Each structure stands twice: as C-alpha cells, then as structure tokens.
Image (cartoon, rainbow, N blue to C red; front, side, top):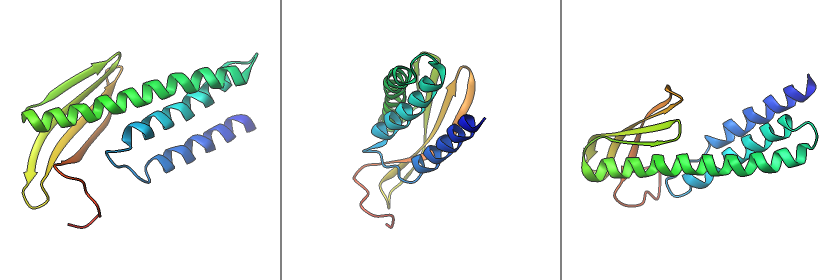
Length: 140
C-alpha cells in the first residue's frame, strides 16, 4: 500500500510541475519528459521480475508517445491558423482537432480551440494562442 501511495504522490508532483511553464518552443520536450516519467513508473510497477527493465522500457515508450502527441498537437494548431479552417489529426487511438477562432491584431496572436480525444473520450478541451512572433514577456 505504501508503494501505491508513493507512486500516486509522484504522479501528483509531476502533474503539478508539468503545468508550471509551457511555451510552444519546449512543449514537445515537456510532453516527452512527462510521458517518460509516467511510462517509467508504470513499467517499474508492471515488471515484477526486473523493475529496472520495466522502467527503462516504459520510459522509452512514454517519451515517444508523449513527444509525438505533443508535436501533432502543435502541428494541428499551426495548420489550423495558416489555413483558417478546422484541422483533424489522428495517431493510433488519439485524435487532435484544432479550430481557428479569432485574431487579435494588437498582439498578433490567433486563438485556436484544441480538443484531444483518446480512445473516443474527450480528454482535453482548451483555447490557446498561436502568435506570429515570439512572446518575450507576459505583458503586451
């Protein structure tokens, strides 16, 4: 029971830290890192004979999946903005839909509604900005 409590606490800390900073430049790396951490923990728990082997295999698989889904998500947003029409990408059981909403001429940023489904279940629905330049500070 203590092992599960420690694992749950670790997942909670990783989840909270993953939401601290997000920029478009390092989002793929964050997705890969979070996927690797979750995959390593799950692999270590699932491989009773050799937890280290399970952790390494889980980390590799999690990094590929986490980074891949994050990259597809970024690409969908960028394509939706450039084409000004909804874009749908799918990878395995994950579907990403990006719909352009509005453009703010003052900030030169496009608002995009992004929805992500996994196994037919909506897991994320958010509005994000895709800016023409690089945002240096949080103020405009």
